[in-house]
Length: 158
Image (cartoon, rainbow, N blue to C red; front, top):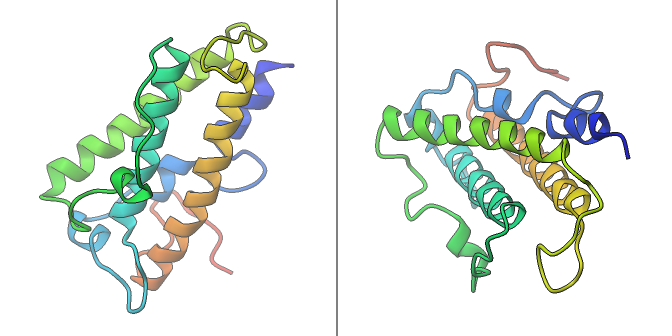
């Protein structure tokens, strides 16, 4: 498999704007605003995506992180970040993780040994791509609902 296929997927090329750009330019207070009848905030999505990205990157690094007991364990304790610094540092960690995933895509994609199921490096990266894609759409919708869409770099508004 050509690694460029996975790298393009990490950034949503041809499908949607890059996942980190979905969070671009948001004030932390708006990121923690919960739309009526929504179970989540944009902050929840950023935190959750970063949590799973970190988890998969640990696996790719040969570590065996414990699987969470409950989905809620992968979300923040509070749906509101503490401040702009926490928002910015989490977004930077998310961006840095994507760069690390890019580097992983340049390695042997058929390598296994990351878990007991024989999962390949390519499969773990695809898990990351699909997970980020799924929750990117949720984050974009939440931004629309809080009146903060599109981000400064643009995004479809229809």
